[in-house]
Image 1: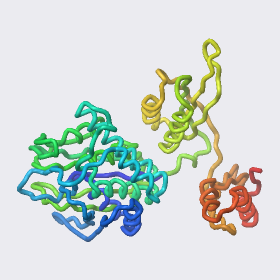
Image 2: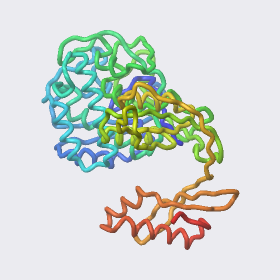
Image 3: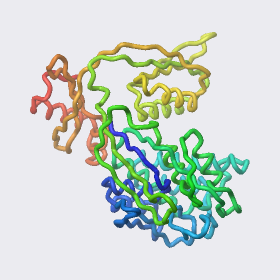
Image 4: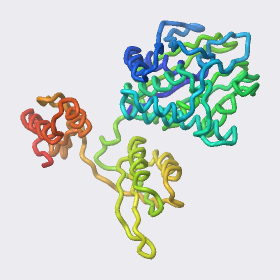
Length: 418
């Protein structure tokens, strides 16, 4: 399991996060392709070496033709409060949804980007006493901020992390000038977006964490810190443009790696269950997908009959003990249940490894299970088969079977699931 941990010594903004992802190895050319697919002219990303107070890293900048002072890049005049004055066109949530949904980017990146904007919309709506769809995004709706958010979500997708954690985020003091007037620093939207996240107040009269940075990290965060026993794989440093008073304007991103939980042949897991009879199937499907993405060992549903023979669904979630709180939070927030039953279960699983086999359509990952030192079963990764099927216009079943055939020829498993 790989966890991406952010240390925001100088704060967090969209371009600071972009710089950290690039410093970890994301190719800026791949991010510029995302901006091109948004079907807007004049949005480009540049990345250059930079340093601050002895720390060397990467400085990322978004360039657009759209006139706006909205870009939260920590790069405004050091002698002035951070300004959010709106000099460009505003966009509502539906405008941004259409722009992102039309883009030629992975569905996972679309979902993550839209979740960030929806989180910002909810925060702004709460502050202004309205609904998210009635909010007009000024600063965050500018093209540079749209590029920041979609680019960051694409960068995280390319790094293929299993989770994200953050250190306490620093908050400055003073005032900021927004499109709506003079506000205290941090901005009200930033404070709302940071609810539940650990922060620390520092003696810096600048906006250190922007709404874009707060929204990205609050949506991405899955862990409070890297799991115990993690080892450092690599780190990247993003350098902001502003010179801070007493600290380097740096955002560090560190990749930590832990052993996969599937490697243990036995172990306890927690079983979370609840009955649902007043929620649409689409929402149950979305919840199941998100639980799995968040690290659930398994998620499944069972048709049941409840009191007075009402038809319902039994939702069952298996997870490791350290993921209990995260799973409960997701279940309560995204379903209609008023309670969750919990039990412990002993499980025995095969030791697993993943190897790639070559088929006439391309490479496919094979999950291979071992019992008592012997390979006893193997299964192609269905996502790989589906992707190759789309690419070649071939039946997924043919690719699935060709992966089994290639695995047989290589002798990677003695028995296969048929």
